[in-house]
Structure formats: structure tokens, C-alpha cells
Amino acid sequence: MKMKIRVCQGVGGIVVVTMVTSLMIVYNSSSADRSSSSSSSLSSRRLDAPVPHTKRPDRNATSVLEGYAGVMDHKPLKMHCRTCALVTSSGQLTGSMRGEEIDRSECVIRMNDAPSTEYQEDVGQRTNLRVVAHSSLQRVLRSRQELLNGSQETVFIFWGPSSCMRRDGRGHVFNNLRLVNQLLPKLKVYIITRIKMLKFDELFKKETGVDRKRSNSWLSTGWFTMAIALELCDRINVYGMVPPDFCRSSSYPTVPYHYYEPLGPDECSMYLSHERSRRGSHHRFITEKRVFSNWARTFNIHFYQPDWKPAAVISNENSSHSIIPAGS
Image 1 (cartoon, rainbow, N blue to C red):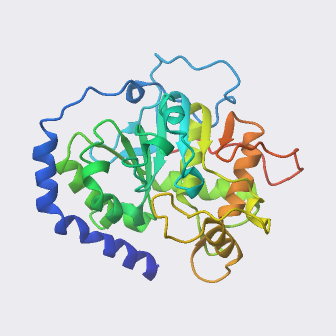
Image 2 (cartoon, rainbow, N blue to C red):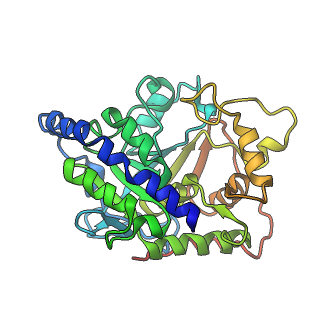
């Protein structure tokens, strides 16, 4: 708990430091009005609905994604896409030349502060949804010219522990997000509610048999992004995600963990060190990828760069393919 509070408080002073710059952003962005993207008005599909191979939902119907609340009005998210490109931050995308293919998708989903500027040929340039960890708020603000000022058509969903996201004045991240949204009122900023966060934990335990808290691990932004994509997309094309056993090979290619940090840590070294760790906070990247592979056998999920398909079905009594229900 103390660690969580320190993380939240560390983020707490960011907006104050960037206040003047943010006000300048408001002034600059006021002259760059754009029409709302068609995806923002699309109807949504619940994760407890039939799998995507069934009849598509009525796009004119009024439906919502519960559990994602606007930071200003607390209203749920309204969004639906036929095809989504879920673009990871992996170095697997470097030199891929997948940019045009990614941009042809109806909706493009990115994570945290992953940029597109200067990387368009490999990762595309459009962004309809960006899923951001509470710990990445500072990096997003540092890249505010591209990610905020240039993102009037992008929906932002922030996730974090309830201590950071509480709405009673003591949730430091939530307070900062409200301030950012006040300074940039055209931004579409949402948070994942406490009840929904608990459901994500329940889903992880149901699919893996592992209690996240007892295992001293954090769900990754990739976990939240994939689960959110299952709610709003009929088809998900995932770019840059390796299969679960990719890093077990002694001959795996070395690529950076982030395509935009070529001198950063090696991707597989990061995955393996987190997976093997039993002390301190860490992610279960490989475990999560096993779940995604299982989901792809039932849902309309496809993997590119590298291109791969899930292996034959392996019996797993913990995995029910019953995706997380909507919750406020």
C-alpha cells in the first residue's frame, strides 16, 4: 500500500509542473478543431455477448461499455469497431512496414506513450483508442504535443489502483486527469472503475488459476488492452505480439522491448525476468500471452509480426473463455 501511495503521489505533482505548458496547448489546440471520428459514435458490444463470429450488432443501436467512466461527466464509454488493429509497443514492429495495413483498420489501438510520429511506416499514424497505465501518465504528458494536443479524436482509457483513481479528492491520478481534461476539454478521457478493475482480477484468476495479489504481480497494460478490445471490436488484429513460448527458444531474435527505445532492454529478457520473479512487483507477460492464445481459439483474434496461430487446444479447467462481463 505504501508503494502504491508513493507511486500515486509521484504522479501527483506532474500537472502542476506542466500547467503553463498545458494552457499553451489549449490555446494552440483551440484553432485545430476536427470533426469527431465515426468510431466514437459507434455502438458497443459487451464481453458477455456472443463471440464475434455471430451476427454483428446493430451499429445504430444505443449501447455502452460499462466500467469505463468519463473523468468529467462519469458517463460510460460508447464505442464499437468492426475491425481493430491492436498495435503493441514491441521491437518486433521495427522494419515491419505494416503502417499502411494498420491504418486501414477501422480503429487503431495503442498503449501508454507509444508514438507514431517518425515510425509511421512500421506502426501507422492513426490512433482511435489509447490505453494508459497510471504510471505512464508522466510520460504521456512529456509527449503531450503529439499524444494530447494532436489527439482530439482519440479516446484515452487510464487504469490504476483504486487508491490513485478514487473520486473523493484523494485520488491523485484521477485529480490530475480531471485537471488535464479541464485544460483540454475536447479530450475524451476515461478511467476504469474500481468494480471493473476487480473483474479484471477475477478474470485473470479464472483463466490462469493464479491470484494476482497473492502472486505479487501486476496485470500489464497489454492485459487491459486486449480485454477492452474484446468488448469493442468484432475482429482484432494484433501487431507485434509474440506467441507464449517464443522466448523459451535459445535462438529467439533479440529485439528491444519498445520499438521507440532501440537501446532499451531486450524484449525476451524482460518477459523472462518478470515471469520468473517471485519478489517485488512484476508482470506475468508470458502467462498473459498464453491466455490471449486461448482466447484466439474462440474469439476473432489474429496475430501478425510475427504471424502465428494458436496451437491445438489444450484442456485447461481454469480457462472458461467466459470473458469479463460489463460492470460499473
